View 1 (cartoon, rainbow, N blue to C red):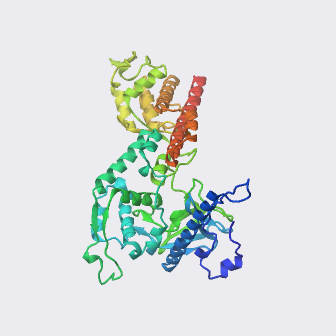
View 2: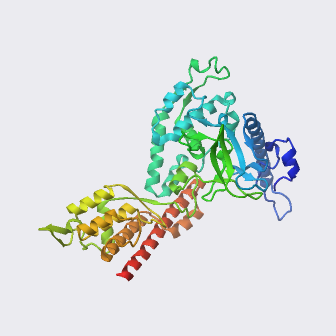
View 3: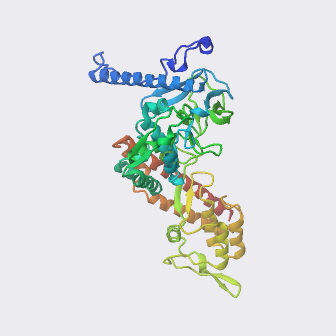
Length: 504
């Protein structure tokens, strides 16, 4: 329940926002209904939760004082809350109109690779990190502040960060990784792990150097730290799940603002202002409503890898495939198109183009000169990554265009397939026969992707009930969403085939 604070007290009192006693909320512990008394385990659990609440209240008070002293501002009707199992978040503590500033964060409260806490030796190491692992660049800076402890100007902020990242696949045990059943994400997790092991696995020592403390900065403390892969992994996940990449600058950490949770229908946005950044409402908020930001139109791969959660029925989720000509042959067989003319089966002779069946055993699909020209305009190469989606552009537009080209019966038709707005189903750019064959092959590709999963959705629902850990449960839910994407894609392709057949 929200604290009973009158509007007059909110506006006129000098009581700091972080002193409100209900900002740290806990779950209610059940009692033994049979005896009318709390069980021993219930009492122990309540005591543990209350102890946690006291710790988090102390952490918040220290953080709030630091935040205000360094020029940070928070709206009187905004509260920063902590809930076990969910962490910190922002909520409206009263009615807030649209366009209202919720948080102001001066530049002095932002942390990034370009801020003045970064020594030259640390900066040189940061610059050796590949762009792909940008979160580890910022993670190195964050880790330096953690090692500095109370000597860090960001100590109260560091103490607010989670000590573990259970949702991040970076820290999944092997059995939870296997439950993902999705090679593209497993490969990304492995690549991050390999980088952490190679970069800091044997112990990486960084010394700020004797010049770090000088006449211009006598308040600084020199730090020498030895980093291992686990520590850098923790810091990298903190960075990836909290950093803001905006305004053309390198990623930055924004204390307070970075505890906002994600929504594809956000209630607030971050924007640049003189002297810093601000969090502003995008619509009217009622008391108790969460203050949420959009992290971007991200797939569940991106959300899980960088933030440690997924969104059910995510409209921006997709399944990754590869343009593989051997797979095209297999898809043609599944779709009953093994004898349909394709590729060089359209013979060029004396300017006359005739069709003959192509062998399904060919390692590749040989193309006519005009098909090759059309494919070059599409820009699709062997093993290029494709995406299928549950709605909208359900089949990668390049893949659909390429399938139309493969089944085209003339240079003119292939050219139209390559140059048209080819992401749209049932376009009038190729013959109905060509369109139907392309769509049926696309349907078979989605079916093959579904078959790559060793379990189906019904089995996943049963397996989820007995998941061995929260990480395993999240991995199972992740793969279920991928199967729903493929099911949605196949449903839309089937409707497109029916429309094409009906109009033929």
